[in-house]
Length: 107
Length: 121
Image (cartoon, rainbow over all chains, first blue to last red; front, side):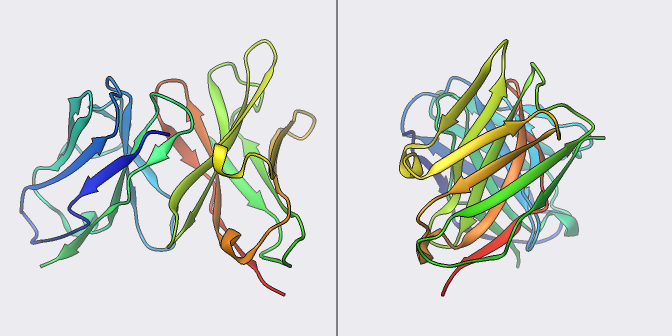
């Protein structure tokens, strides 16, 4: 199975900050990577697919980049609604696997 | 608007079978451009994909290796839904279980509301 490693596991930031979350895969994914946002008690929400494609309705302050084994999710200006946990997920090879999550907390 | 509605018990006894159903509205379980997945989440295991079913001229079912021997996923075209069965459960199977739609090449864009399942006597 492909292992997905996210860093950091927790991130403290303020409203308006630029935030970057890293995701590393144990083998090349090409660009078959998605990012999800999850809030407590809710299902994950798809933000970005195929590394950099914004899901419909997702604010443009979210962006994704990378290829191969190294990927990033960037929030250009953190908003109050963005405090949540973020997960990367590969879909290059089955079984699908997720990263361990990055919790974005209020500083 | 596509919606997934989960149903099933929240408490299962050890060694018994966990059974959940995911009813689809706004799309078809027989869609040629989607797959229908089960995922679970627990503090110890994180998000764990269990398997999927999809139709491409015939039915396919894929399972994750971790629970492959105990998991069964079935489509039900008559009710436009799909189901999960997990046999011989133990307390380690305690988790929130989600169903989700996986669009071709686009990630899992629609999720059910989640079902908290506790395995306990």
